[in-house]
Length: 343
Image 1: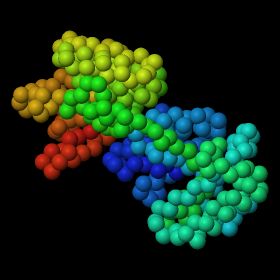
Image 2: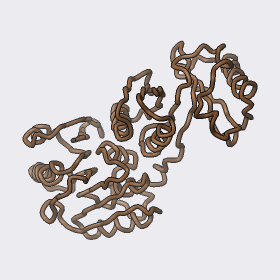
Image 3: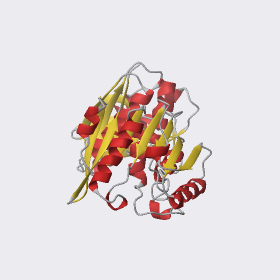
Image 4: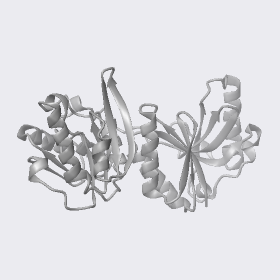
């Protein structure tokens, strides 16, 4: 069967969010098409799928994603509001023992108006209660049926989302050990997902600091290995990982990743933020770090996502690596960092 859905993405780092969505879809589905409908909505068409597998996979994608706020599995590609009560619910809803619902409306133009909003809610009620005998439950519904208004088009479907990603709880200053160089959890999560790591894969962070990226990997059930040169930060990484409640495998190693280790497995995925700026004495040191990092880790990993304070496209070309994405991110008016995604 073919399934159409809408994904509402965060507008922070929006092009990167689209890349994350594409990467996660590629882990679970063989054939799909994504198109931008109206920012922040992305339309996704998935082909040749079984609905039970789709629901499980979409929930996992939603749970892992840093950017997806909610998804809508479409009952119809586009609808006429007056036809809502006559629409047939999909079999995957009717074959489950579900009895309660809530109705949502999302207006992406801001011109819906109270009267029309009420009219739409009434039509959803006619469909769910009068036609299918679902009971209204606004506090704890088993399913959410939503209408998205985009321009002069309306979309009806089953909405699902994960509200509590916990980014605020895991911000660097809230962890037991803090350094000012730690990435925010959302960026760490983006690196992990853009690396292409599958659920059973292992993330390697060879410059882990106090384990911001491994902590975020643990939060979505991904195992990790992390290496840190300085003992006090290695100890901090261990403390932070012990602080986060998870049964996922992880390990922390103190050592120089560029001299003491070499990556031999091709089933490892890299997500890291190599040192730069105040951590390295000169720009030549930065160049050397990235050269060795690419040579020892990126060329041997199955997928990599990392930040760089400078363009390193020429270095990557020397190794014949596939640069899937490059995103410039402006930190402030005088500093641009580059997010590289390598396959």
